[in-house]
Length: 297
Image (cartoon, rainbow, N blue to C red; front, side, top):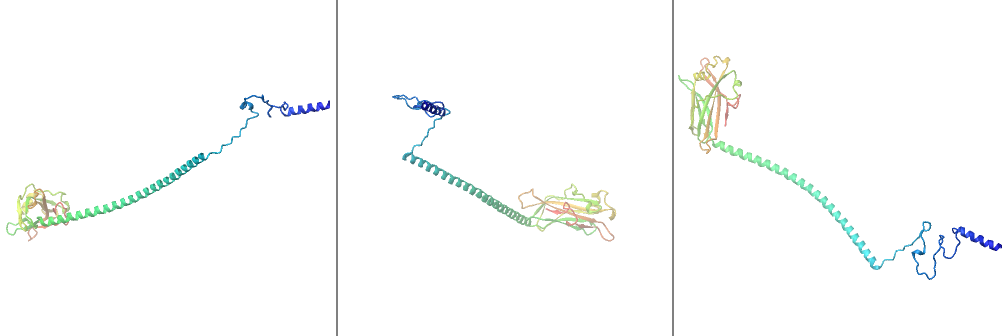
């Protein structure tokens, strides 16, 4: 009797320990009974039931690669390494080329600036040479062209007055195309108008003056000046001064261009009778007088 009770207690303990079921043949450790049938040909995934409490654990082992697969893998790795290596070298070459291009552009800019400076200097030198050549040519032309100068001489004798002549100091003949005179009575030479006012009468036209030759332009005296000033002639020296001036236009007979004219302008101050002295003309040669009254072109 006691022996039977001990066996029952052992079976109950085992059942409690194994989830309420007694360990019997055909029961898995999770407490599920195997569907074991002798002679049943269906064995596989239905042999065990996978539950959240008892997952199925599968140990997957990688198969050893064959020699062909190993060779292909090695070839693929070598190809990738080759591409990566040459890609790196190509990137380095592109970077070096870019740096060299930047340096080359910098050198080109420096060379261009230097060439520009040299060209600027050469242009300046060429311009200076051209100006010098032009001046030399003009000097040669001026040395060969006619130059008409004004000569005022008093007339001796009862007639008195003054003769105005032109003298050709150049090397070629000159033809006078026009000549005019004017007269002004002012307090001083600074009171002369900015532009000379000449009479409308043309004194000389189409007169040829040979080199070292002379030609008379006009004769005048104090009466001529009185008529020109029309009552504005000063009676006393402190009332004002009388200035007579003129212009002569001429051209070079050897110049094929008949429209290229030269001009001589002159001015002098008239001095009336003082005591036993007769009247006189004091010439101004570019000192204290504007260019509009005295110049040579």
